Amino acid sequence: MPFPQSRTHTSEDYWNLPEGKRAELIEGGLYAMAPPDFIHQRLAAQLTKLIGNYIDAHNGDCVIIPAPFAVNLDASDKNWVEPDISVICDKQKLTAHGCLGAPDWIVEIVSPSSRKMDYNRKNALYSEAGVREYWIIDPAKEKVTVYFYQEDADPVIYTFNQVIYSGIYRDLSIIVSELLK
Picture 1 (cartoon, helix red, strand yellow):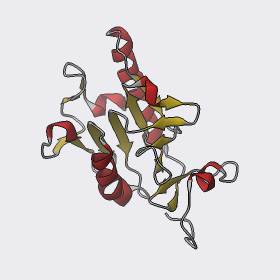
Picture 2 (cartoon, rainbow, N blue to C red):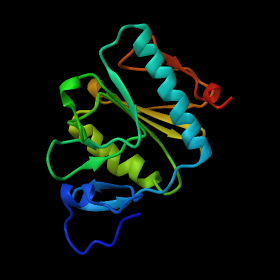
Picture 3 (tube, helix red, strand yellow):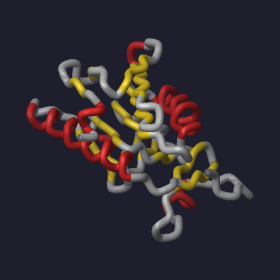
Picture 4 (cartoon, rainbow, N blue to C red):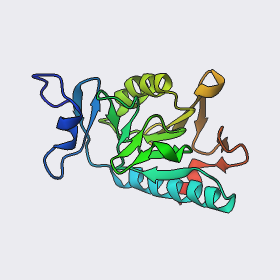
């Protein structure tokens, strides 16, 4: 849901939003973010824990960070997004403000107000920015759409009951339905 757009917004507008207001800055437009529901938060928390535990157990170099966390995809003044989950393997991208540049793996959990943004606009932004892997988890449809941008492959659609393997961590498997138990 966009804020009224009377002008092009910048990083300064993004960082000076009123207390308690969350939005994303995409190509000069500020888009308000609705509070997530229980299923959304449960999935985000469980996925963060599962992926984080995997990284720790394998002495991985990547960092997993859940929202709210600012990601400046193109390290410019145009695009600040807050993915539900970001996995960043180049720690030099991490700053006090967030991540400057594309994370390696992004997970978005669809809510009714974010559906179009997650499937269309963010998908294009993430692909162009150099994100290696993008998962769209859709609780309403109980589907997960996985893009392996680094392989230039067609998206793969899974049900919540199917095993999904990460492209970044080939031996990490996830069954989304098990995260909701």
